[in-house]
Length: 192
View 1: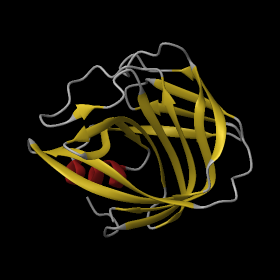
View 2 (view 1 turned 180 degrees about the vertical axis):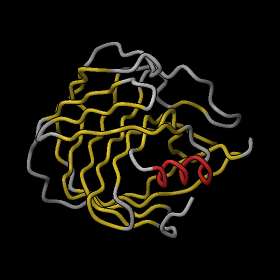
View 3 (view 1 turned 90 degrees about the horizontal axis):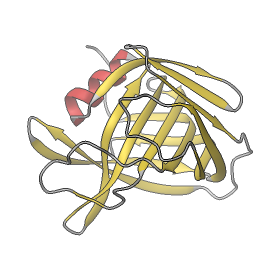
View 4 (view 1 turned 30 degrees about the horizontal axis):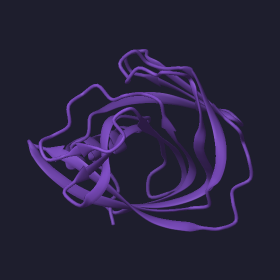
């Protein structure tokens, strides 16, 4: 599958939040769960850059020795090239989806018909730009790899409500969180 050369430089909307959902799949050997009762939701809508797509990723906060990072539990993409790169090069479990964005909501439907719908407070992005090197672990051919994604965002606190949640995702203890971040002008470089 053809795709723009890496690294990708992208801009768009970021919605992230710590959800009360305990992951159910085992981690690769060498990784330890930091927040075993929670899952980090990362939803992005890239509208400018090397490749344009939306992606929903469920992440686990993990530790390998002294290094803290994330491990992907599930990834949905609405662009086949993004799905291919993430699955083949970064070793993440991926699916294709369709995504519909509203002013304060996003509805994703997987290729198997499962739906995830998120409502959020649509606020103006914050003023302070925060650069973060986002470490990510993957499992490629039973070998643990570590890469980093550079994210620069202006965080604004938002309330997230999940009105649809797939049965294949970790079960939610409740459907909302106040620990959400929204940025409509996020920038990302993957990988750095």
